[in-house]
Image (cartoon, rainbow, N blue to C red; front, side):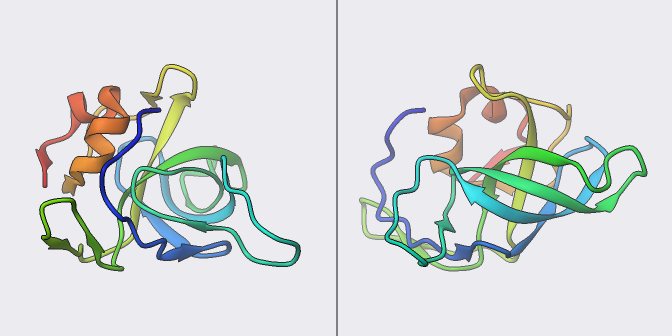
Length: 134
């Protein structure tokens, strides 16, 4: 994972539901943990764009439901500021399922909708299958 040069506001707390926007079979997922997030006792972990999360599938195909999967956040509703001063907001909170976390290989082959530039920089394999990068 590469570092990103944006002050990303963490807009997705633990327990938030996100849309899965690839063709892996999952539709909705609930955030369980955020990888690499250090916090004090009893404070909820929060995720932002380009973060790796562990999620539980709440809706989707029967073989994917109730499974724990690794997910990368590609869009968030909460606005964040880039280094050039622009503020970015998306319509929904969305993520994609990863097959291999170490290599960053996505499970699906198509991503519906745009992904953030920060996600494309940090996860290059995800950027290859993205239709648009904002």
